[in-house]
Length: 234
Image (tube, rainbow, N blue to C red; front, top):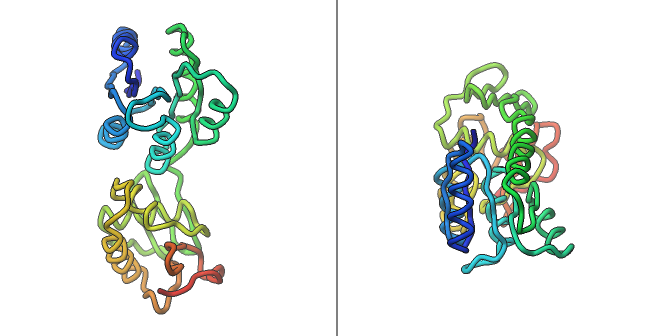
C-alpha cells in the first residue's frame, strides 16, 4: 500500500484520516500546518499527499506551489471549499485531484488508487539524451560520446535535472529547491561551484560553453551543441 502524508489543521479530521487510512493498510504520517507539512514531504518522500487548503500558517494553494517546485508527488486536495475558482486554482497549481468535504473513505481510497496508477504509469527511469550526452536515471550513469562521466551524487542530480528540461532556462532557485532541497533561496554560490565542476567534467567552461549555457541573472540552460544560441556566458 501507499505512504500517505496528511496535511490537515483540524485535529479531529486529521486523526480520523490517519486512523482510517492506517486501517486500510497505508503507512500514514501527518502535519497540522503547511510549513511542517512541506518539510515532511521533503524528508519522508510520501507516495501521495492529502492537502487541506485552509491551513493556519499559509494558504494551501501557496503550499501546493511550493511543493510542486521540489517534488512531483501526487497531491489530492481535500477541502471544504467547493467553489469553482478554488478548484481551478488548485488544479492549475499542480493538484492531481480535488475532493470536497464531507466525503466517504471509499471515495477517497479510490482517488488515491487512481492518482497512484497515473503516477506509476510515467517512466522516470527512461534515459535522457541531449546530443552525445546520455543520462540513465535507473543506473545513475551518465556518458558523453559513450564514455562514462565520473560524477558525484549532486553533480549527477544537477545534470539529470537540467537534461530533463533540456532547452529551458532553469533558475538557480529551482536548482537549489530540487537538488539541494532548499526551496527558499540562498546558497547560489553552491550552485555556481557545482556547475563549474560539472562543466569541467563535460570538457567545457563558462567562457567556452558546449552543453551548459549560463543566462546572466537568471540561471542555466542545457542544450545540445547545435542548439547553443540563447546562452549568455556569465
